[in-house]
Image (tube, rainbow, N blue to C red; front, top):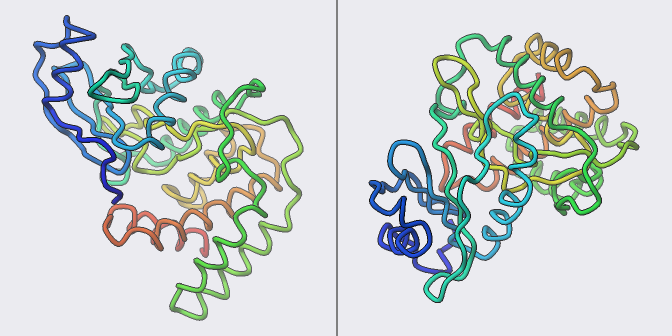
Length: 288
């Protein structure tokens, strides 16, 4: 995990709240996660504070602050649109956010009770999200792009697959996906990083989609790769039906994206067994 580029702590959160949102400053603060990109603290019963710990993460928070309130109004599941925005100070160089606390556990740890219904709900969510994006929407050099842009990473990742039969099968999946016609529609709004650790489950149902830092525009196949991350073939079909407009080429590219992302998770998760487990499950689903 990369080191924090600035010191982040509960004391810093308290100081920033005192200075900028004093009506929230007396609420309890508890660290929930100190991850690659953000310090995330529970703030009272209703809120979270997201404090970037790296300059790269600060850019992602800025994207969330700019676009998520607008997108949230038309999405069928809750998303963590900022309710307060924090400004840089002499002690802290970046913008930061207060967002709603959304109850639930990540789907990577707690699967929905009814996976077919969950697939339908997620398909409907993506159908609502995947609308044409404006010209000033964020552009991500790694997500939403043509599959050709992922070829080098996939080939490098395949070199680390120990089993020769698995490697050959994955190579065939990749070649089929890469040969599918490219996306020729307008750039669509994308979550950009949709996987089971960014989906919440509460009372057995998908309850929210979180972490829109990679929100971007482009080929919807990137997001549709989630169909191989949580679901069986039958459940994937339910997601596709609920989504409503994934042609065969888009679905084939989505499978290619699932393979590409599984290899990323497998290759870069030495200190993150949760993501390593996701990578292994996705890789098997893609080959099946």
